[in-house]
Length: 206
Image (tube, rainbow, N blue to C red; front, side, top):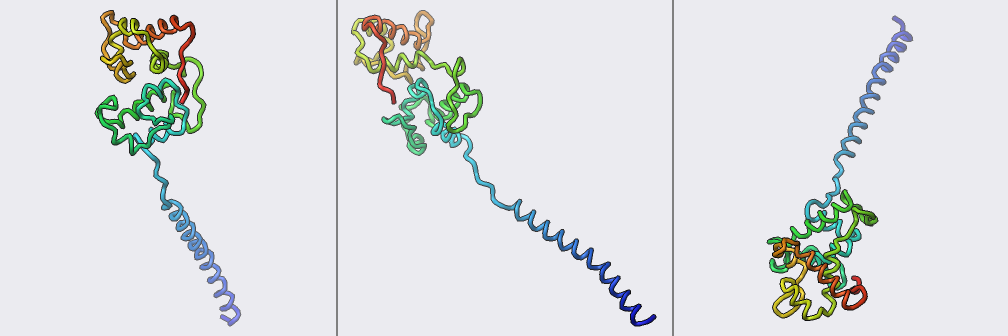
């Protein structure tokens, strides 16, 4: 075989090896990039009560739920820090764990939306967003001078010093002798107070 033939044969063999080597090198690069992408850390998302609290802090909680769980809010109407809620005494909350009340408030709100609301989502209108009138009437009565004879007519709604019991306390009371929910007594009392005053009762909005 001539020198020229040997050279040509060498070039052909070299070309046959270069193609697979380039392809293999490319595969290594692609696999490396894919591995790097998949190994990037995923941002942790809040879960459980932390997620419920986060939702409550960034959506419009309606007036009746805010009053029903008023002890979870500060004097400015802002949701208290979760760290503060965690340390609340048992006698200030409904259950044995104040965090359970955070979840209960969230669940009540979620049931009205029909799903976990997104931050800034508009409160639903219509039947699903209907407020609890008994709770709103209790709030109105809490900042109104109630005549003594009406207090005597609904003694179970008042403390021994004549002060209207908190909604938290009233909501945990059993039905009255007629089998009615104590919340209905609140609305009945409210209607009689309004009848005396001649106009609806309202309190400053938070």
